[in-house]
Amino acid sequence: MSFIFGTILEKYKLLNKKIMKKLVMILLFSAGMIQAQEVKTVPQISVSGEGKIKVTPDEALITVAVENTGKESAEVKKKNDEIVDKVLKLIKQRGIPTSDYQTQRVNLYKNYDYNAKKYNYVANQTISIHLKDLTKYDKLMMDLVDSGINSIQGVEFKSSKIKEFERDARKKAMVDAKQKAEDYVSVLAGQKVGKALVISDNSYTNYPRPVYAEMKTMAMADGSAMPKETLAIGEIEIISNVSVSFVLE
Image (cartoon, rainbow, N blue to C red; front, side, top):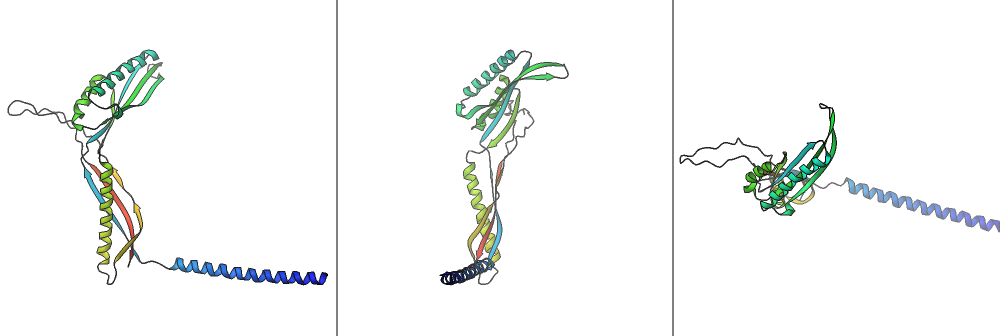
């Protein structure tokens, strides 16, 4: 009985060795095929393209702040709230929808004055205004200052059609890249530009910063005055850069 069992065991071991040998051969063959595929290269050309669009802004995002300091927290807060109330009413009177302005930050805190060596309270509030009609800009800014704001913390010019212009810039960049590739390949006999393999995007937008011009009133010949020009809004520059690899056919 032990002899029969031993014979069966030996045959089982031999069968396992044959199976393992075949498995190793299959794995080696598969690895060779993968390596052969990796070694095989596709003829291609890599180029860059640029699309640039300049746009005159038609909107502005204005951030203003109201701040007051005093000895009593309740007094400081009340004074700040009164000015903020005037500012918000003014914005509403100028026909700006409530969806286009909002409070960004509200603070009330105790502050130590090292020069006077005493504590005081500071209340401040920041308000952002999305102005969609730049013809109202100068008048609005003067009225905001008169209403009691302490500072203009920022003005960012925008375009209401920025997404549309960004799409146009991307298309121009791709057309530029394709043209470059065709220019290079045009001198190679028997080859042409095929499908794109890889596209890498590196787009950005330059928003102009406000440049305040000198406020002068120029007298005209008839005695009237020229309108004051207090702001040069510049242009928004939308730049799309792409890197593209095309197949060479």
